[in-house]
Length: 189
Picture 1 (cartoon, helix red, strand yellow):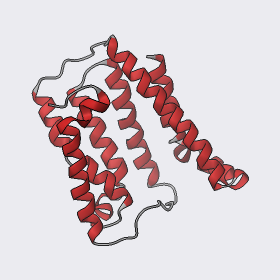
Picture 2: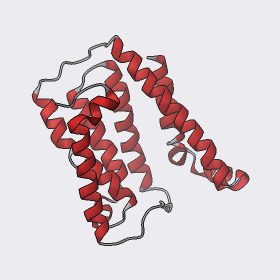
Picture 3: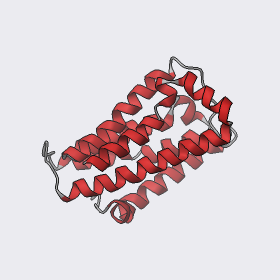
């Protein structure tokens, strides 16, 4: 569990710098340059991500059950997951979906985390998915109080919504049909 917790602290911690210390972040960018800051940020995020993946894998070998979700919650989780990938795509493909969702990446993370909390009840699941859900809620609230930053992505076009929906649903289908089992080791069905 230690690797999972440390991974979450690193990964969500570096992603929280703009939430808790936006001034410090801006100073780092000014002193080091944007590319250097992004490099440091990326190394820390990747290290945290690898640690949380390894830690989650280790924790799954000796699960600590906190609650036993009924079978129907797995079906509900599958349904809730349908908009997640289109929202992820829409974060970088500006269009009506992005305008309506305002922060589609955070919406996707919240839905993904909530759906997985419904379907999984071990301590590792609660730490992983609950941590991401809490982070996404806090980040969304903080975005109302800080100046917007430009997010790299495609130029705004009407076709972006079509690409986001079709591409997102294709990735969702791939996950349901076997990618989730291959990557995570657990079939969603």
